[in-house]
Amino acid sequence: MEVNANLSHSANWILQVQRPDGAIPWLERGIFDPWNHTESAMALAVAGHLDAARAAYAHLCDIQRADGALPGECGASVPMDAQNRYLVAEKARPLIDTNFTAYCALGVWHLYQLSGDRSDLERFAPLVEAAMGFVLAHQSEHGEIAWRACDPGEALADVDALRTGNCSIYKSLEAAALIRQTLGRSGADYLEARRRIGVALLQRPARFDRTWAPKSNFAMDWYYPVFCGLLNGQEAREHLLARRGEFIDDGLGCRCVTEQPWTTVAETCELAMALMAIGEDVRAKTLLGWCAPLRDDRGGFAMGWQSEEQIIWPDERPAWTAGAMVLALDAVHQITSAHGVLCGKLSPDDEEAPMSAQG
Image (cartoon, rainbow, N blue to C red; front, side, top):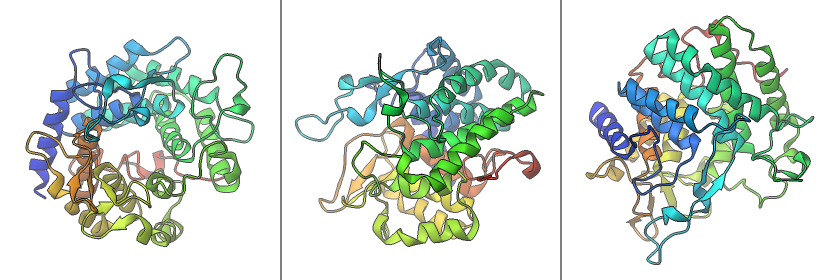
């Protein structure tokens, strides 16, 4: 793929999807959640659209609840239309998700790595502080964080914790600590909460996905421990290699789930960034190259390819798919000063980044 052309192509699509109030939904037709919104905002910043990215974070400030939560919708619950080609966006259900809320910290830190403007941290630090207050209120004594807000009368112990979501929060907490440290405050409590998540993920697997069907067939559960920095070095390489044959369709990309011949651009891009985190540069570049046929002339990239039926499916070009492509291009080709933020190195100064996973 031609790197700069694909970066601009993807970022321009996100700009088209972004609304006047700064919100970046999945599609022009709708579906909004704070995680994918932030992913798209980071991509805009990589492409040089810093004001558009700031507008996106300002939108999160505008919608943040008094308890710090960032409301959104559950895109995974959205049905397909009768022809099984398009998402019925208006059917999205409201959702308060801890991982979705936490991710703003990584976005704000990423913005600062690109702008170098301390005022960006000062402006959005209250957003991050309130968000993390909500998230950490959902951490159990065992270390894991419940995936959503409790319903009225529901006990925290009755809400499940998700492995991928906790991996993502693990990384977001590191960014939140770095924001505090840069502003001259201690991030020790965030790092301690992060350490406890790491211990739970590595030593207490039964604490996760207790009430859901087994999720070991999901690609994100496979590569996120590496992507978030929980696993490093040879251990991370062995972890990814052990199941490569289950998830990778050579020449196509990474499957979303093992049992479906459906390779998706976002998962392929995230896996490429996970590979970059452990020095597998050649494999990462190869994966991105396989995504080239899914570039859409109308803007962005198709969500995925169904190889059994030989069709693009669904016929959607989410803003977050374009966002994942931009961030992967930056990570693999080291285009900006923030190229390492999503693949293991949050700060250009190694000594500033508290990357120890266990303790």
